[in-house]
Length: 318
Length: 256
Image (cartoon, rainbow over all chains, first blue to last red; front, side, top):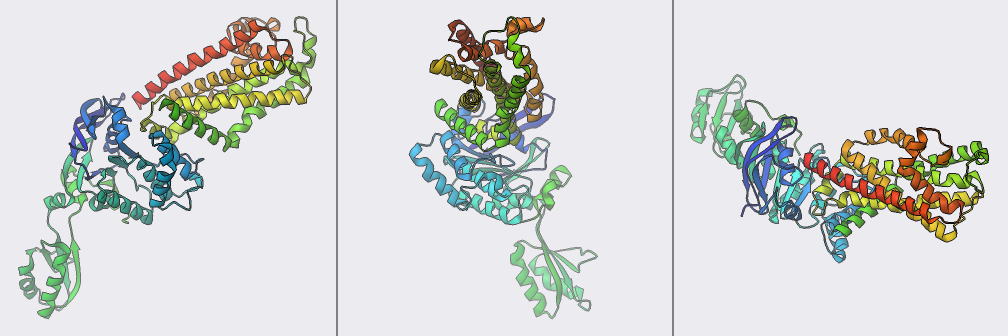
């Protein structure tokens, strides 16, 4: 049974805006699914339907085996949700919020304190646990939000743009936590507008544009669709370029050079191809002045599918 | 689960209110100032023909102060819910496996507790400044019961408005209307002394019966007819506005 399954899922608002225009997706148990797209693509609307905050106006979706429209209560028992902008009560302390969340999820009174404390420790908020959330940094709020979403050990975790607006260190901390959840077998549905986030964390990525999934697959497979990685090589001015072409040609497929580089070599093994190429040139007495490995990105995939760039393509990497 | 969730959310609402003094203070400060001005400037009103026999104008005005404070409590509950909607906390609650009606019942239940303390504040204030509770302990209990019921009804009204308006500033904008409704009731002056059309409006205004119901045990021995009318009016508000707020909640969750 799929952890999440959607068929022709649609949402049209009263204004007539069709935010989601027929989404089909399947997320297997234990999978981290990255839902990638620019602002306004329909990511959040899709998540809100899957977590039962919004009724679909068409199609059907199940989460943890239950229909989001007809069995929302069963769905809510089995999901953890961390929505955009970490909606936390600033007047409550971290531990008070954890305990409230535990109570609302029906966790037995005797377990509430222990489970809250464990999760607070896990997300590194022990020292801040008794401080009001209003005094937390953005990263701390996100970590608390994540801990709250995990309080009832959900089968499926929804993270809606969990690192938007965070500094690189906080982003990295959250990434580590998502990886840990993946290792523990939790299904994670992660929306993001950051390419690198989807690339690094997701087992599979669905790229959404205009309310539809335009392409779906593993990050490696998607990138392979748009091209193979290549090495851009610059040699010293006195180098014999023709000889250099002969030296590197066994290591890949030579492409026409550009104005800035002397050699462009398509390679199959990414960064693992660098050392043999450098060694071959060195042994031939040719000095490398510069070398860069250029790999296709998910933005290239997005451009190929939609003709435009992802807004988050330039977001700072962690 | 409904009871557990409602109690947990009521506890949170109470805690939040106590931690936000800027929300608590206006509930009692403004009606206190109004009470002081009224009692100081209009105390000779008791000499007017038709004015009921009272120990003093303060005794008569206490229930007006309480009613005014409770109405402000309703506005405050509405603003709190509107802020929860604005900041997304409402969505967090909606995504939890709780009966959704407990999302608003917790806030309303908290208001019913706060209402008791609001009424107690005015009773103690009155006693300090020379008022008497003619109905004794039973009279005080009647005041607290009606206050708690009325506070619940006003809070439900505030919550309903918040669910319809979805933002705090709109709920806040309703504040002046609250006073218009209060002024066309018998809260401040006996109905017999009001001019038309205020007198007729006051006759159909539930605030008149709530104020009169709380006033009766303060200014005289208990007249059960007046008290029961007060309880019925307050209970009516609870039933109507809790019902309407549940309808508004369903609409809000459906159209979110």
